[in-house]
Length: 73
Image (cartoon, rainbow, N blue to C red; front, side):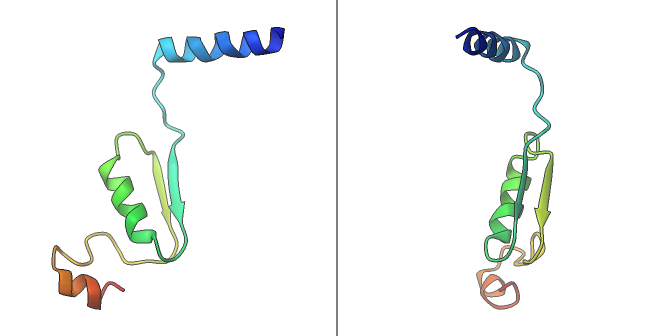
């Protein structure tokens, strides 16, 4: 019971201190790498790193649907 109380107090103190989160990363292998890259770009202020192993590079389609379906697959 004391352990749970101490954990709660520690958690509450972290919330009050509003310490910056730098431990959030995203990574993916294979099909969803495009979404992983987009997630990292969209939330770059909150995500500290991104690991993409296999997949198209960022901005591969350059805003063109035909390029996305052809060269970036």
